[in-house]
Image 1: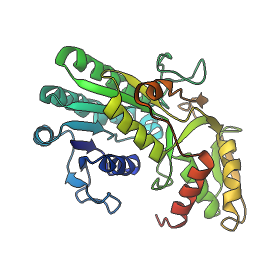
Image 2: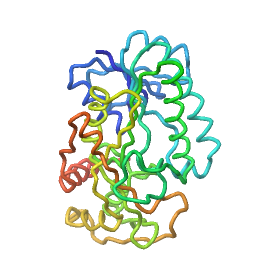
Image 3: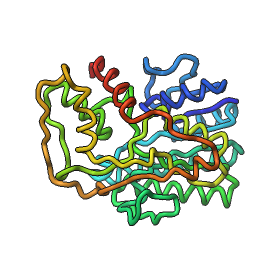
Image 4: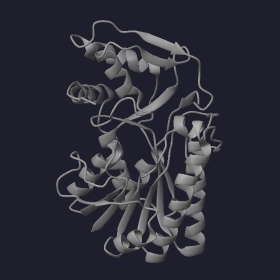
Length: 308
């Protein structure tokens, strides 16, 4: 099986490529960088280019039976600062991708966002049938793309599965990129910088180890039902302060003083987001395996050597 991973050179993408290679697949990564990054797993092919290039996509679809679409140009914070850029840089090329994949008859996994499409939760944990009322442009665009995938499934026969992941963490997540509280907090502590928390205790999030997230995407690809949406998370909610308290024992000998800087809440942050992944577990047999504390330890070891 030949699998194309669009946006596969990033944090989640590199772990996903490893998981795909472990199944015996031939994997090609399409990413905007001209050259393959050093962290790209050995055994994967690399193509530098933009998934908005129709001719390039058509050529790649001829030799790949599966497509996983991870690429996205913004994060919730930058989408709030420039919603027009978030919309224009992500919506048109992704809709065009849906059209090309539908025409080719290939199978697509679209990676949406479990942390933003629901908005403020009326009940926790959140199931896939929870109302979707996103409060960030990022979430609005992701949800709109889900609707376009469904539209192309009905009108053009697009064979797709959608996953809504929680907040990934683990080795390879570079700090201070606009997302990734755990990487930011650990690195801040090790560098003697204050850990920024928005609000008194911060937001409550569902943190899932990146290896478990990658395995969940592969499970959705292999066993998920077409045109279905699957949450992908741990089912456990932790506030920013909860996370800091879990990190503190790991900082002995690495951080002299831990400081927390409380800033005002941000309007695009939902207060709590915890995902119910029971549907994915039932349909595919996937289960998260990494304990939170063990995942923190793996993350710390990687960040100790990070020189970014």
